[in-house]
Image (cartoon, rainbow, N blue to C red; front, top):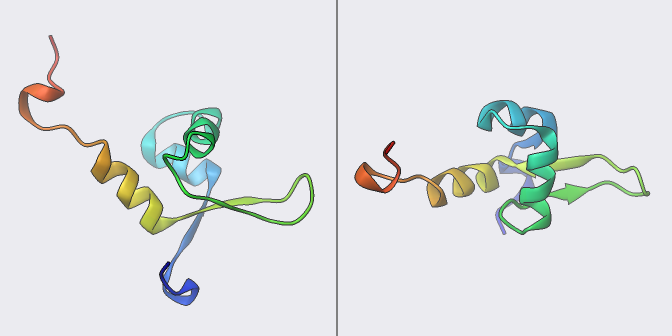
Length: 71
């Protein structure tokens, strides 16, 4: 794990905006383990996604050429 002081944390809403998906989709990505997240204390603790995790998600799901082309 990287040092916390060097990592930026994003809200679920910020990640949803970047990926252009709903915040519910971001929650599913977290639940599936595709995105790392930290959760504050309590049942309604805030969720934050490390920027490095978002970068890794985008890199892992980027397709090139014919892989992701429209048909």
